[in-house]
Length: 265
Ligand code: FAD
Image 1 (cartoon, protein in one colour):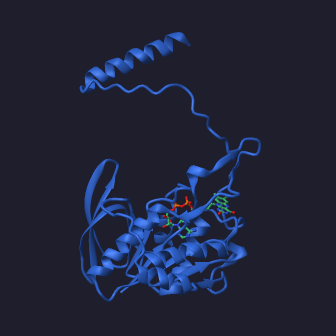
Image 2: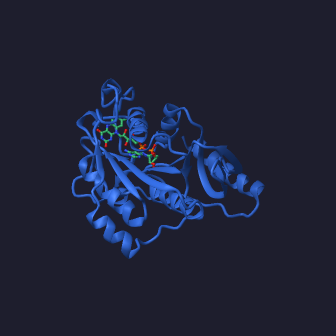
Image 3: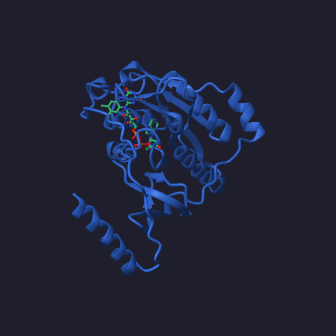
């Protein structure tokens, strides 16, 4: 059984500063890491592999050649194989173009995998749109925000998924794409064997042509999204917590505060 895990290299967002004049992120000198939610997705893949012994995990990333660092990290954590989709044609891609490139890359690297795992979101772009768009382009179902794998067989999977403050138990036949929340997953330390393997591991680099992409659908020209302006939002005002332990009382207190705000304007 083939399992593909989509992993993204992201800057450490807690270290990023904003250029207030240009309204852009200052990425220079900021350490790049494997997106933490992608690490939870990999952890879920490793737990599936433990249960279904014939599973093979391929990690796939789209990014500049330096993104191979996250493949090496994933190999050190126990992935079997890794692929970097890298080409100038991918530069400037929005979520849809990224999903298109990933869908082509998945087909090239592992055909139709039984399971595709993604993080619930990337901590830099934060849109959480890439997994759904990738599933749509591959024509397969998606279950988002999973917290637990309840049951798995050679043909289907049952998971717990949490969204809109509800917990659902959902099943899907393969192929399926799942996005992973932290849930019960813990980030593991690399084993000594896997760390040695990662040290000398050379991931495959796949270009847009290798992946069979239509270049019209990539990069800025293939991206319908336009970033018109980025405005850093300064935190202002105080935060007050109402801990009355009783909703009706709490709403009354909030009402009083709102009345004051309205009457002072
Ligand atoms: P999410 O949808 O939040 O990610 C969820 C999950 O999808 C991840 O956990 C991971 O499993 C998977 N995933 C997402 N991205 C990747 C990836 N690249 N590889 C593997 N798996 C992935 N970014 C640039 O770096 N350079 C640019 O020039 C650039 N130009 C852009 C231009 C426009 C107009 C727009 C709108 C965006 C641009 N971006 C650019 C941002 C880029 O589109 C996003 O980084 C990308 O689409 C991923 O979206 P996200 O970070 O919101 O991921």
